[in-house]
Structures are given as structure tokens and as C-alpha cells.
Length: 411
Ligand code: PMP
Image 1 (cartoon, rainbow, N blue to C red):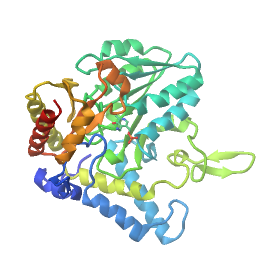
Image 2 (image 1 turned 60 degrees about the vertical axis):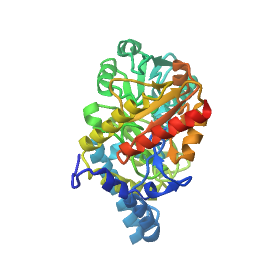
Image 3 (image 1 turned 180 degrees about the horizontal axis):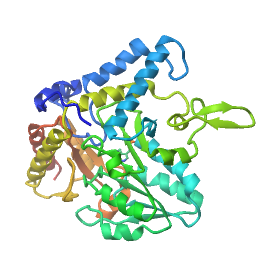
Image 4 (image 1 turned 90 degrees about the vertical axis):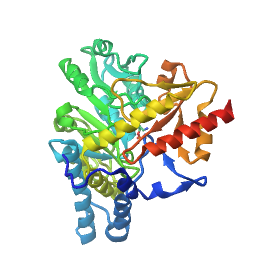
């Protein structure tokens, strides 16, 4: 759902992000680590400042003005998130700490409630550790089996094999929408439909998709969709779990405490309704409210404009990086987001990352919390450049020159 008021102009957009004006090691910052976390526009920073200077109060319980104002702002953010995701009900939007927290919530609540010995959870070979370890933990506890769908050398899921791995024992398929390491965009709508045919529920890890594409949870028919606001130009420490109302209603709470209860006696506690049942304790109020500022900011543009700009960056960067001798791109799926991982013969990723940082360029190096994926490709780690809509082709030129210089120093 878009409210388009501004035409996308990258130079104008950059002015909204104060950090992009700073220097690092005496050079203009070239920030290409958006997959790890995105920068924040001034409006998000202002929202945080405004909350602490004007609105700070605990929410949901107070009768005084400040508490009511803070509660309204927090709940408005939830309503806007419902629109952003095209969810049917506002109470399907649960505020969490982030993607990891959302997956742990589902693994714990859904897993404890639904898994029996011999049941199966299906993940894929390209999952982030956050979408592996919580499932391993709950499978171990319940005597369930964790199965892993394979990928090909381009970094795409082998769909026939994935579908064969979904059986009548599969309770849940947990799958990443866009791989943070490879950039692969997975056909999650099709996978969800196939999983549903076999009676399995699906959780989508949207950590890398929410910043890059329109997510319509109803069109996808996702049972759960999780992401972190800090990658969507919002604050750290707040994330979203979307879950279908009837499923969330059927599940037990994740944590106990204030706000998630209706009545408490020492003999018995009754639980609050959605979404509060899953939001025990004082939430991250300031950051929850600033979520609305991030969505307001993003919704000035159309997804097409953002997508077109990012695809231009991806194409340009891929072409330019391929001119570097000895450089090999890891992840060449047909459907890719603006993420490029690569290795260079004879160069350690870490050394390259440190040297290009001296030239003002921020890239990620290492296993990107996908160690099993590194093993699949027989490598220890990669260098990853991940682009946001505020990046430019000139910055890609700076990156390529920095890599050439660093490589000459290292070989
Ligand atoms: N899944 C994917 C695909 C990610 O890229 C990330 C962040 N790198 C996560 C999960 C975890 O996100 P967070 O650390 O914000 O919980």
C-alpha cells in the first residue's frame, strides 16, 4: 500500500540520511553493508528524539496524558505496519526485538504446542543461523527431525527436491525470502502453496526482503513472516512478527509477565488477547513508535522506483566486479536482490575488508551467519557488498577501485 508523494531522486534521498555525509578514515563514507543494518533518515532520528523529549511514558496502562499519547503513537505504528504488509487484522502484528526474536517466538510457541516425536521441520541450505538454530533446539527438545532442502551451484533452491522433502510429517517449512549472503530471491509464494497442499505451515524469514520489495502477506498466504526494523531504515531493537490470527490465537504465549495477562491469581492466570498475549513486559516503546517514521519515509516512494534503482546498481556492480581478475561471485541466481558476495583468489576476505575500510568503504566480510552455506560452497567466507536505494554507481566505482588497490597490496 503506497502513498507516493515524491519522485525518487537518489541525490535528494541521500540528503535525508545524515550519516552518509560523514567521512571515514579521511574519505567520504561509502556504506555498502546494508544487509547487516541500514542507515536511518533524519525523520526516524527525530522521532526517537521527540519521544524522549516529549512523550516518554509507559504504555497501555496509564490514564495520564503522556501515557495515552505514547500508547496511541505505538498503536498507530502497529496499524501502519498492518497496511504496509497488507495483513488483514492489526492484532496479527506482533512487536518483537527483531527477526531472531520472532523466529525464536514461533519455534518456542508453535514448536512446543505442535511438535511431536518424529515430526519434521524443513529449512533450506541458505538459511541464516537465526533460522537454523532455534529449529535445531526445539527439534532436539521434541525428538523431531530437521531436514534441509538443497541448493544448486548458482545459489538457487532445487525446488523439486524441496517439494519432495515436504511430507505428511512436516509441521513447518521455515524459509528465507532473500538470502543475506547470496542475494537469491526465493519463490516463497509457490513454496507456501506447495507446503499448504501437504498441510504444513510456513514461516518466512523476511529480514532481507522487507527493505527491498513489497511484502503482501495475504497474497503470499504466509502463516508467519518475520523481519527486523533496523534493516528497513528504522531503529534497532524492534522487529515484526506477522502471524495469521487463527494460528496465533491457537498458540500458547512465549513469555510470561505484565501486559500479556488478563487476570492473575496464584492458582491460575488467563492470558490477554492478541497482540498483547505475545508482548510480555514493557516493550521497546521509542523504537516501536519510530517504526512509523521509517514506514512513512519509505512509503514516499514506489517499490518500482526502489527496485529499478537497486537493479541498476546490482547490474552495474556485477559487471564492474567481474572485470577484477581472480574475483568470483558466490550466488548467481536468476532472481537476485542487490547483494553481491565474492571471493578473490589468494586474498583473505577479512584482509580485503580491513583495507577497503581504510579507503572509506564499508563492506561485510566473513560467513554472514550462514556457516552451512559457506561449507556448501567450500569456502570460509566472502566479501559482501549490499546496496540500498541511497547507494550510487559512483560509490560502486569507489568500491571497485578500492578492491583493485587492496588486492595489489595483498598479492
Ligand atoms: N535472517 C536473515 C536473512 C538476516 O539477514 C538476518 C540479519 N543478518 C537475520 C535473519 C537476523 O536478524 P536480526 O539479527 O536483526 O535478528
